[in-house]
Length: 79
Image 1: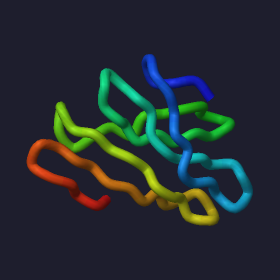
Image 2: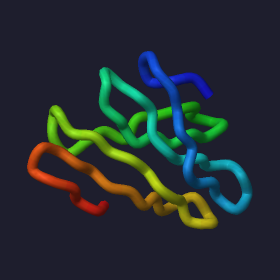
Image 3: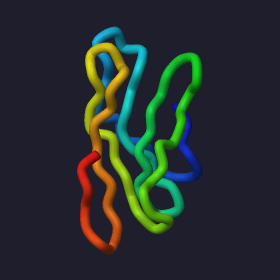
């Protein structure tokens, strides 16, 4: 699958048809939520704040909805 920068990936969810995978990738010492599709490859989903971390925990059966969280020095936020 590759990585966003250097480091490793952790996949945590897969759609029912196996076409959408979600999890997080190590990016500059922080985790960033990722989504992977065959058409688009791996894409970072970003964070709410510059120095935050994010993680995608699961994806709906049809791959349309991704569930995860974002955290910063202010605390975590479900998204």
